[in-house]
Each structure stands twice: as structure tokens, then as C-alpha cells.
Amino acid sequence: MALLRCLTKQLKEMEKDPPPLCQAQPLDSSKDMFNWTATIHGPQGTPFQDGIFHLAIRFPTDFPFKPPRIRFTTRVYHPNISSQGDICLDILQDKWSPALTIRTVLLSICSLLTDPNPEHGLENEILQIYRTNKKKYEENAREWTKKYATVDQEKVSQLDDTFPTDESK
Image 1 (cartoon, rainbow, N blue to C red):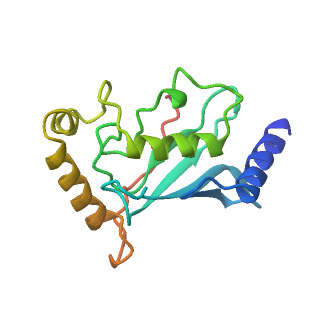
Image 2 (cartoon, rainbow, N blue to C red):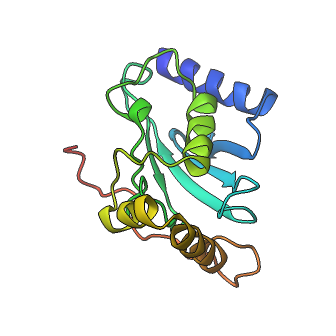
């Protein structure tokens, strides 16, 4: 019961004061408060501008003591985002704190889109291009944004099987 109150509080915070460029809500608040969907509008001045990026959020049963699992379902060309949509962000791993909210996490993900972390990556090839040829990185990221995350696409390409059914992780 405390967990549902916590998730309801998260939802109310998102409705009352959504972070810029972001929104998040449960897939179906009447049946399941543990699985949410989010969108991030690509930050201006980045190769991701004009893109709309979709994310899946799964809250664990021990939230807020453990971080939510967040994954991009829209393909993103970024050194800190894997081809499966996993995000390399310390607050989603070892730097998680129960004081963090889904609002602050989404702000951090937006910040990561603006400023990739060159020290740690999930996609080594993209990380190498980012480190050695930023212009090429930005061209590739812009191309992927246009291909996978723009509204003028008939269908935004999304990854299949957002979360595997294996709960062993």
C-alpha cells in the first residue's frame, strides 16, 4: 500500500510540475501503477531537437529504495544509450537515492542527451566517434533522430520487447 501511495505521489508531481520537454504517466493507472510510459522532446541546440523519444519505465516492488528501470523504446544514436535502449546513468544504478523522483530522473536523462558522458559508454563505436569526431557524431545523431524520432514518420520505429520477461536482473 505504501508503494502505491509513493507512485501516486510521483504521478501527482509529474502532473503538477512536469519537467521541461518531458512527460510521464502510467500505461493504465486503473490497473497497473508499476509500468509507465514517458516522452522526451529532443533538447534544442542538440542533434536530437525536433525528435520525440519514447521511454518505458518499470518501478520495482522495492521502489523508492531501488531505482526504476528505464529504457528508451525509440532508437537513439548516443554513446550512453544502448541499441536495446538501456541508459548508462549513475542515478539509475549505484548513485540512486530514495529522495530522487521520476521528475528528476527525466531531467537527468534530458541532460544526458545534451551532454553525453565521454567516460562511460554502452556503445563503444558511437563513443569512439563522439570522442574523435564530434561533427560526425552529431550528423549521425541528427540522421537517426530524423529517421526514428520525428513525427513526420508514418510510424515511429520502436524496439520490440521493451522489457524481457526474465526478472532475474
